[in-house]
Structures are given as C-alpha cells and as structure tokens.
Length: 511
Ligand SMILES: Nc1ncnc2c1ncn2[C@@H]1O[C@H](COP(=O)(O)OP(=O)(O)OP(=O)(O)O)[C@@H](O)[C@H]1O
Ligand SMILES: [Mg+2]
Image 1 (spheres, rainbow, N blue to C red):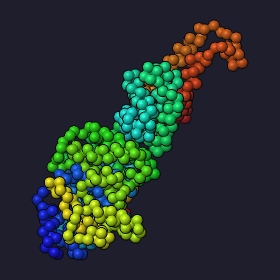
Image 2: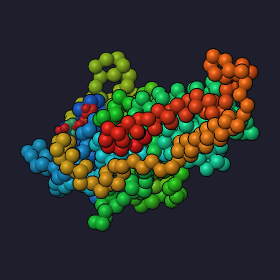
Image 3: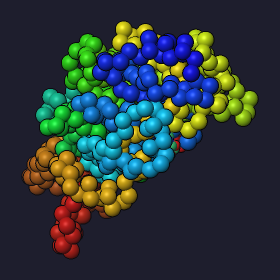
Image 4: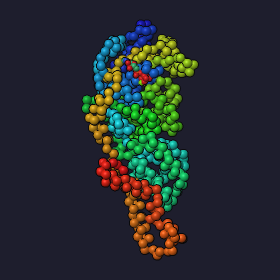
C-alpha cells in the first residue's frame, strides 16, 4: 500500500489511547492491518452517524461499536427497530468469513457475549417501560399531545390544581378523571385558577384517546422506569447493553416518540454536568433513525436537536444509524462528529444527488476520490472520519470493518423468551401498581357529594310533581348532576365491571 496513506493514517489514529476499533485501512483494493481506524473513547460524546445503503453493514457496525463500549465499562442503549441486534447477548460463531475478515484487518478476534437487558414499550419483549403523567409535567405532555398554547396553559392549570389538591396524576385514567371533574361538577373549583372551556377539555380528551390508540395506556403509570438502570455497570466492569425491542411497535411511532421525549428530557434534567470525560457515561444508538424523524412533530425534532447539542457535557453520546445523512435533520447532523459512511448506490438522479451531498460532508483527502469510493465500497466496508482526541476531524479513510464479537444473527424466539423469563429487571417492572391517585380520590369525593346531596334532597319539601317526578321549577338535584356526570358514569361503569369480574371469578385486573 502507498506508504503515504499509511503514514497519514498513523498520524490520524495514534495507538495506545483508549479507543473503539473500527477496522483496517483500505486503499486501491488492498487492506493494511496497521494502524487500525479508531474513535478515541473520550470522543464518543461528540456523537456519530452510521449511514449507507441497505445491507451494507450499518447495523453490524453499530453492534461492534456497542460491544466495545460495553467491554470498556460504558453502558449502552440500543433502539432495535427490526429486532436484529439481540444476538449481542451471546458469543459470535466462528466461520471462514469471520476468520478471513479478522486476518485482513489484523484484529485478534475473539467470540464474546455481552450483558444485555431487554426493554419493551408493550412489555412483550422485555421490561415494561412506564412513566407517570406527573413526571412528564404539563409542558412535555402538551408537546406529546400536540397541543397549542391555549390548550397547554389549560393543562398547566390542571396540573397546578392537582398539585394544590394533592391529587396524584399517575396514569391517563387519573388525568381523564380530573378533566371530567373540572369540566363538570368541579368547574367552580377551577374558576379561581382561570377556568377552562368545555371545548378545550374536549380537545385534550380527544388527543389522549388518539395517543392511547397507539398503545400509550401501558406506558403511562407505575412503577416508573428508573433511568438510572440504563447506567448500570456489571461487577466485572462491563457496561450494560439495554436493548429496546421495537419490532412490535413499528406501526406506533407516536408511542416511541412519547417515550423518547420523556427519556431525553428526564435524563437531561437528572444527569449532572461533567464536562469532557475520559469515557462516556452512556451512549445511545438509534438504528433506522429515519423512522424517528419522518413525520415527526416540530416539537419532537427540536427536543432531539436540543438534547444532542447539550448532552455532551453530561457525558452522553448519541449515534444515529440510517441510510442517508439526509434522513437526519441538518441541525442534528451538524452535531455528529464521527462519521461511518457505508456504500451508497447511485442508480437514480436522486441517488446521485444524495451521493454528492454525502461526499461533500467529508474532509478533504488526496488519497481517495470520495464519490467514486462511496459507490465501490463492499459490504462491511465504509469511508470513515472520526475525531482525534483533540477534537479535530481526521481525514477520511476507506476501512474494512472488524467482525462483531457477539452473534450477528438475532436470538431466536425461545432464546429471547428464556432471557426475558430470567431477568430480574423484567420481573421488577412487570406488575403495574395502581395506588390511590386522582381517580380514586375524585371517586370518593363524588360519592361523598352524592350522599350529602341525597340527604339534602330528603329534607326538602316536595313540589308538584311532573311526569318526570320533579317540580317544574326545581333544578336537577346535585345528586342527579353527579350521577349524570361523565366521571360518575365512568366510575359506575368501572364498579359494575369490577363487580361482574368478581362475581364471575375473573382474575382481578387493574381497573
Ligand atoms: N463488520 C462486519 N463483519 C462481518 N460481516 C459483516 C460486517 N458488516 C456487515 N456484514 C455482513 O453484512 C450483512 C448485512 O449487514 P447489516 O445487517 O449490518 O446491514 P444494514 O446496512 O444494517 O442493512 P439494513 O439496511 O437492511 O438494515 C450482515 O448480515 C453480515 O453478513
Ligand atoms: Mg440494519
């Protein structure tokens, strides 16, 4: 290989600093095993992009980076949209292709599995992720529900009222009960807070139903997922790999973005400022990141941009994995310091445009014709520029990537089920708790009001009855109002259902 290429690579990737190994330099079809192309561990908080056409090796690159982070004691969070990274839990299988690649790249390959916990938004494929309505707070919840400013201010009032009245907002049933109460029997109580229109309540309730139709009901409630769990390191000093299995929620993007917004906001709020660290505290990988941003709300995109900009100083790195750099909003893209660009195809004029755009994002190099190399890279090869430990971008080098140490194929259904069954974390989050919160307290209040109203009614003189049994001028009694209120109807419906359940001996489900 041209000694000038090797010399420049040595200058770009000095050995002997803690780093993630990506692979060996490729030039004119030849692979040189020294020096290896790396990302300094301290630069993992400068974020990254792994891009390339379908089947070019993006997910395997994600896997090999995540594995080495874990080995270096850095916890990792993976959003596994297609269910193809669960194999990271078990050692890889040797084969001629792995051996060949290990020889080409001069990498001492060893099969290894990594400590993995599976997470799930449905509770089907891992620990059930949950968060309470109150931990969202009115502003984040408004973003999630897509509310305008007026609706947001009403929701803020409702939260304030609940705070003052010690009404806990845990799940959507609580929020719904409060909204129904405040727009009906409790309307007077809200007057001193500014009041709210029935139309606004209607919108809030509708947006909640919309989100629930995406499966949000399982997500809101207790026990809330403790984000500290994501920062675990095993007793042998390996970082936990938390794999969020999303294959069963692919068609529910709102559920995933609700979780993401909560997780990013909470992490940002709770992690201390640490400045630049020798190694990150946590690194996120979002595979199939185009799904994250396509059709995403402006609020969502802004939230991601903001977090990506600010989490570096909290010791968190974020890597996006997607086909084209164009899939990532420009403001986010500009923050991604480490770039692994797998092969791009140039079949159509649009492809050509994307290719030129991708090529322009690379620093200058005398060693490669960037556009030509981007279309000629093989599977598991990429054009790579990373940040040096001083934070400056290296020139781009075509690289043959090392094989992942863990299995490249996913766990089969039995293997996954066995791991989930054996997980303490899954068991810990498995049962939802329904402690006394707004819904139950309002139910008690409604019952008390109804009792008092009934007592009052019994004392009052009876007027001339009409066909409905009520004197013409007499307004509907408080008891009647209470019993006709949507809240009471829901409550009565629920009581009836629970009674029926108890009578027919159905297992006592929550609510
Ligand atoms: N570093 C590597 N070492 C060995 N084999 C690899 C490597 N990278 C990719 N491969 C091979 O390429 C195949 C496709 O890789 P991968 O699933 O990562 O592609 P992808 O770009 O994520 O595809 P998609 O766009 O469909 O998600 C793998 O199954 C594996 O056989
Ligand atoms: Mg993939």
